[in-house]
Amino acid sequence: MTHPYRDAIFLIERLHRHFLEVVKVELDRAGIEDINNVQALILYNIGQEELTVGELTNRGYYLGSNVSYNVKKMVENGYLENERSTHDRRSVRLRLSPKGLELFGRMSEMFTRQIAALGEAAITDDGLKDVIKQLQTLEQFWTRQLNLAARRPAPFGTAAA
Image: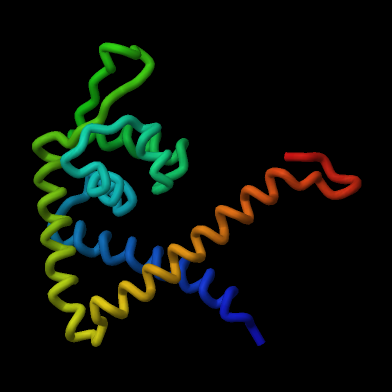
Protein backbone atom coordinates (compact mmCIF):
# COMPACT_ATOMS: atom_id res chain seq x y z
CA MET A 1 0.00 0.00 0.00
CA THR A 2 1.38 3.36 -0.95
CA HIS A 3 0.82 6.78 0.52
CA PRO A 4 -0.79 9.55 -1.56
CA TYR A 5 2.40 11.59 -1.07
CA ARG A 6 4.47 8.97 -2.94
CA ASP A 7 1.77 8.60 -5.57
CA ALA A 8 1.77 12.37 -6.13
CA ILE A 9 5.56 12.55 -6.48
CA PHE A 10 5.65 9.77 -9.05
CA LEU A 11 2.67 11.23 -10.90
CA ILE A 12 4.35 14.65 -11.12
CA GLU A 13 7.46 13.03 -12.58
CA ARG A 14 5.41 10.95 -15.04
CA LEU A 15 3.35 13.97 -16.11
CA HIS A 16 6.50 15.98 -16.79
CA ARG A 17 7.95 13.22 -18.98
CA HIS A 18 4.61 12.82 -20.72
CA PHE A 19 4.39 16.54 -21.46
CA LEU A 20 7.93 16.47 -22.88
CA GLU A 21 6.71 13.74 -25.24
CA VAL A 22 3.79 15.96 -26.28
CA VAL A 23 6.27 18.73 -27.14
CA LYS A 24 8.47 16.22 -29.02
CA VAL A 25 5.51 15.09 -31.12
CA GLU A 26 4.73 18.73 -31.91
CA LEU A 27 8.32 19.31 -33.05
CA ASP A 28 8.26 16.11 -35.13
CA ARG A 29 4.95 17.08 -36.78
CA ALA A 30 6.49 20.42 -37.75
CA GLY A 31 9.61 18.69 -39.13
CA ILE A 32 11.84 20.47 -36.61
CA GLU A 33 14.86 18.28 -35.90
CA ASP A 34 17.53 20.72 -34.73
CA ILE A 35 16.07 21.38 -31.27
CA ASN A 36 14.81 18.95 -28.65
CA ASN A 37 11.76 19.17 -26.43
CA VAL A 38 13.64 20.42 -23.35
CA GLN A 39 15.33 23.12 -25.40
CA ALA A 40 11.97 24.13 -26.88
CA LEU A 41 10.57 24.62 -23.37
CA ILE A 42 13.59 26.70 -22.34
CA LEU A 43 13.05 28.78 -25.47
CA TYR A 44 9.36 29.18 -24.62
CA ASN A 45 10.20 30.28 -21.07
CA ILE A 46 12.59 32.93 -22.39
CA GLY A 47 9.80 34.20 -24.64
CA GLN A 48 9.97 37.90 -25.40
CA GLU A 49 12.41 38.61 -22.57
CA GLU A 50 16.16 39.05 -22.54
CA LEU A 51 17.70 36.90 -19.79
CA THR A 52 20.99 35.48 -18.57
CA VAL A 53 21.56 31.77 -17.98
CA GLY A 54 21.68 32.59 -14.27
CA GLU A 55 18.24 34.16 -14.40
CA LEU A 56 16.84 31.04 -16.07
CA THR A 57 18.28 28.80 -13.36
CA ASN A 58 17.27 31.19 -10.55
CA ARG A 59 13.66 30.96 -11.69
CA GLY A 60 13.92 27.32 -10.73
CA TYR A 61 13.08 25.90 -14.14
CA TYR A 62 16.37 24.17 -14.92
CA LEU A 63 19.66 22.95 -13.52
CA GLY A 64 22.64 25.16 -14.34
CA SER A 65 24.78 22.67 -16.27
CA ASN A 66 21.81 21.53 -18.33
CA VAL A 67 20.85 25.11 -19.17
CA SER A 68 24.38 26.00 -20.27
CA TYR A 69 24.59 22.99 -22.58
CA ASN A 70 21.11 23.55 -24.02
CA VAL A 71 21.67 27.29 -24.50
CA LYS A 72 24.92 26.54 -26.34
CA LYS A 73 23.07 24.16 -28.68
CA MET A 74 20.25 26.66 -29.29
CA VAL A 75 22.76 29.40 -30.14
CA GLU A 76 24.58 27.02 -32.51
CA ASN A 77 21.29 26.11 -34.21
CA GLY A 78 20.16 29.73 -34.55
CA TYR A 79 17.29 29.80 -32.03
CA LEU A 80 18.97 32.16 -29.57
CA GLU A 81 21.15 35.21 -29.90
CA ASN A 82 23.58 36.07 -27.15
CA GLU A 83 25.37 39.27 -26.33
CA ARG A 84 27.93 40.05 -23.65
CA SER A 85 26.75 42.57 -21.10
CA THR A 86 28.44 45.93 -21.42
CA HIS A 87 28.46 46.27 -17.61
CA ASP A 88 29.68 42.77 -16.71
CA ARG A 89 31.72 41.07 -19.43
CA ARG A 90 31.21 37.69 -17.71
CA SER A 91 27.44 37.92 -18.15
CA VAL A 92 25.77 36.96 -21.43
CA ARG A 93 22.25 38.16 -22.27
CA LEU A 94 20.04 35.77 -24.25
CA ARG A 95 17.10 36.55 -26.51
CA LEU A 96 15.20 34.67 -29.17
CA SER A 97 16.41 35.02 -32.74
CA PRO A 98 13.88 35.32 -35.58
CA LYS A 99 14.04 31.51 -35.88
CA GLY A 100 13.46 31.24 -32.11
CA LEU A 101 10.53 33.63 -32.28
CA GLU A 102 8.97 31.48 -35.00
CA LEU A 103 9.23 28.39 -32.78
CA PHE A 104 7.89 30.42 -29.84
CA GLY A 105 4.84 31.17 -32.00
CA ARG A 106 4.38 27.47 -32.80
CA MET A 107 4.63 26.61 -29.10
CA SER A 108 2.07 29.32 -28.27
CA GLU A 109 -0.29 27.85 -30.88
CA MET A 110 0.20 24.40 -29.35
CA PHE A 111 -0.77 25.72 -25.91
CA THR A 112 -3.78 27.53 -27.39
CA ARG A 113 -4.98 24.28 -29.05
CA GLN A 114 -4.48 22.37 -25.82
CA ILE A 115 -6.36 24.96 -23.77
CA ALA A 116 -9.27 24.77 -26.24
CA ALA A 117 -9.29 20.96 -25.91
CA LEU A 118 -9.38 20.97 -22.09
CA GLY A 119 -13.18 21.15 -22.05
CA GLU A 120 -13.40 17.92 -24.05
CA ALA A 121 -11.28 16.26 -21.36
CA ALA A 122 -13.59 17.56 -18.61
CA ILE A 123 -10.76 19.67 -17.17
CA THR A 124 -12.06 22.97 -15.86
CA ASP A 125 -10.26 26.20 -14.99
CA ASP A 126 -11.38 25.80 -11.38
CA GLY A 127 -10.07 22.24 -11.29
CA LEU A 128 -6.71 23.37 -12.63
CA LYS A 129 -6.60 26.22 -10.10
CA ASP A 130 -7.13 23.67 -7.30
CA VAL A 131 -4.30 21.51 -8.67
CA ILE A 132 -2.01 24.55 -8.92
CA LYS A 133 -2.78 25.50 -5.33
CA GLN A 134 -1.90 22.01 -4.11
CA LEU A 135 1.30 21.90 -6.19
CA GLN A 136 2.35 25.31 -4.82
CA THR A 137 1.77 24.03 -1.29
CA LEU A 138 3.90 20.96 -2.08
CA GLU A 139 6.61 23.23 -3.50
CA GLN A 140 6.60 25.28 -0.28
CA PHE A 141 6.81 22.06 1.76
CA TRP A 142 9.85 20.91 -0.23
CA THR A 143 11.49 24.33 0.15
CA ARG A 144 11.05 24.07 3.93
CA GLN A 145 12.49 20.53 3.83
CA LEU A 146 15.56 21.80 1.95
CA ASN A 147 16.05 24.61 4.45
CA LEU A 148 15.73 22.20 7.38
CA ALA A 149 18.15 19.73 5.80
CA ALA A 150 20.72 22.48 5.23
CA ARG A 151 20.67 23.34 8.96
CA ARG A 152 20.59 19.75 10.22
CA PRO A 153 23.95 18.19 11.13
CA ALA A 154 25.03 15.16 9.09
CA PRO A 155 24.15 11.81 10.69
CA PHE A 156 26.89 10.23 12.83
CA GLY A 157 29.51 8.45 10.75
CA THR A 158 28.72 10.21 7.47
CA ALA A 159 30.47 13.06 5.76
CA ALA A 160 28.54 16.22 5.06
CA ALA A 161 27.92 16.74 1.34
